[in-house]
Amino acid sequence: MKFKTKVLIIDDEKDFAHFLKLNLENTGRYKVYTANDGIAGVKTARRKKPNVVLLDIMMPGMDGFEVLAQIKGTVKTYEIPVVMLTALDNAESRSEAQGNFAGEYLVKPVPLERLTAIIDRVAIYG
Image 1 (cartoon, rainbow, N blue to C red):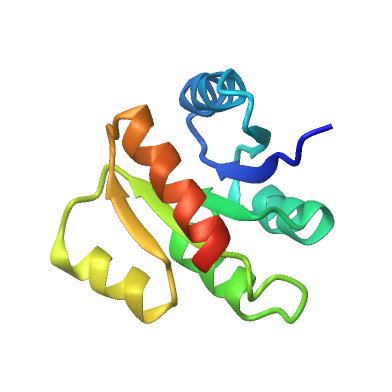
Image 2: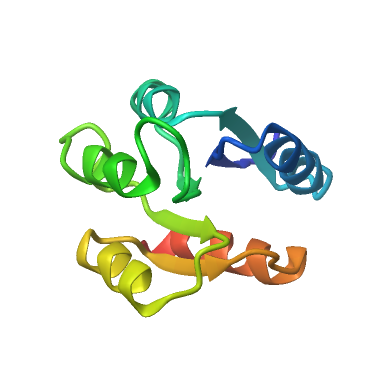
């Protein structure tokens, strides 16, 4: 069996997360997990230890920046690359993500080919 990159999508928009999961898994290169809120996302990251996390910012309860801080602030998960995948397109959000060690910052919508290239790159190089 060929190695598949494990990807965790943390996004409160269930339809978007499901659509993205199907598209990524249909490439045959990824095993995808989803979490629809920040708390579940942090727990899933700790349990599944994905190769890459795709993280939305605007979520109720624990927002994406808090999730990022939790992932990067824990020995079990701090090495997992996190790609911010969000509708927020402003310098302040980009700066906060970068300051909290997000590997990439992408604004939705992102073409699948570009997203898979970034997933593959950060999975290898962090």
